[in-house]
Amino acid sequence: LDQTISIQALIFREKIFLRDNFTCKFCGYLHKKGIGIQIHHIIKKCQNKEMYYVEKNVITLCTFCHKDLHKHENKNDEN
Image (cartoon, rainbow, N blue to C red; front, side):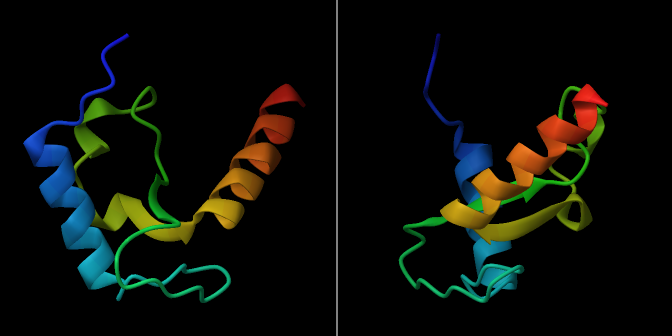
């Protein structure tokens, strides 16, 4: 499995962090170096590949909120 991140993905991620002021949209966690925050795709790549680099499809979340969100999404997918 190739774990490398494309330059396009890195630039996109940084652009979203800047847009969201490096702040988790759920809990307000702020980190200026981008450590402990991630981008979350509202519409998953497996659902629509064309939405992957669409700014309105992503939000900045801290690691904890991102894990929690996916935990709830997975529970909803099971029902």
